[in-house]
Length: 188
Image 1 (tube, rainbow, N blue to C red):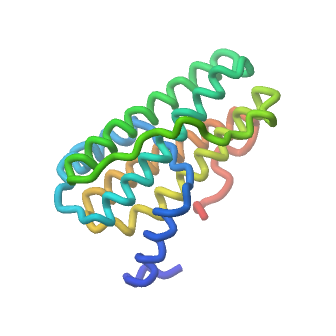
Image 2: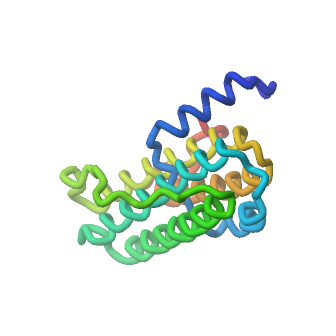
Image 3: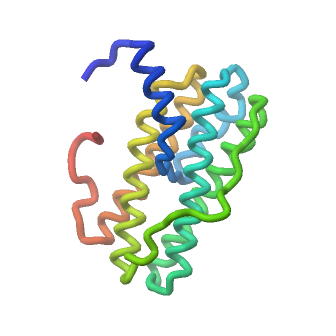
């Protein structure tokens, strides 16, 4: 693994993040540490706005995904309550990301009218939890890719804060599934 600054790698990551449609779902607990950084991130360039919009789009998708899970009738208390809490985290992230994008002079993306979720495969609480865990793992990976490519380092710190919260979501969901909450020492 190389930590050397490579502009070509950074540009490739930006292009990937901007076009991948990866689900970045988020959460608000760890975001608190990065809230000021996001709000003050006025030096960011257009590439930072694109990364933030990609994150916002994924947060909006995560909100919709948790809504599908909550309305499925498959989640029982206290799992349903936890899903609603996680959805609330995503809502807080989305609100802050949208405000930050606007502060930076960009236009925040809107939620899609409809998302292509695999609802036909969700037949049990475990299925819903597995789907949510997959989304959260994708979020961890996506934020991990975004952190080093922001031009504004304060935005990197805030994204890292969200990344930490996403990792907690993923661990809690894995635990609820009876899986090892932290399956390895490194995220890949």
